[in-house]
Image (cartoon, rainbow, N blue to C red; front, side):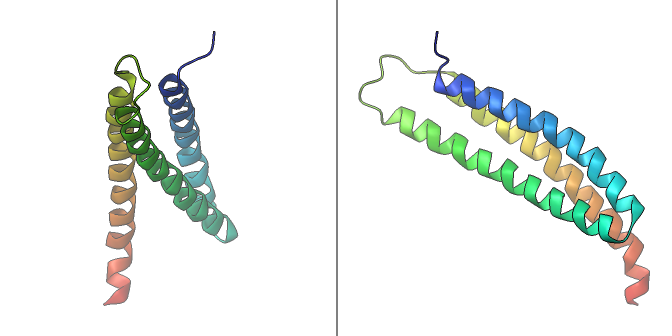
Length: 113
């Protein structure tokens, strides 16, 4: 039995969320090591944010395609669940990343004065 497109999207985003959790830990270990590891850690986080935001855009695009599909027999509620799940996970990780950035700025602010 072939899985629906909305379920496949949900599973892919769930896998990306699990990878993101491990990537946060791994990048924090790299950043705490300093030097070139810090640069690699920051680049990994930026790439991860790009993937999270691209999944948000893809969720909206898939919903719009589903809404305007003339051949659909029923409305697949998983598209709405996907958007809510992507918004929730993106919100949590963006707040976490924002907190890290603010923490770094608080530490570096006395050096700028």
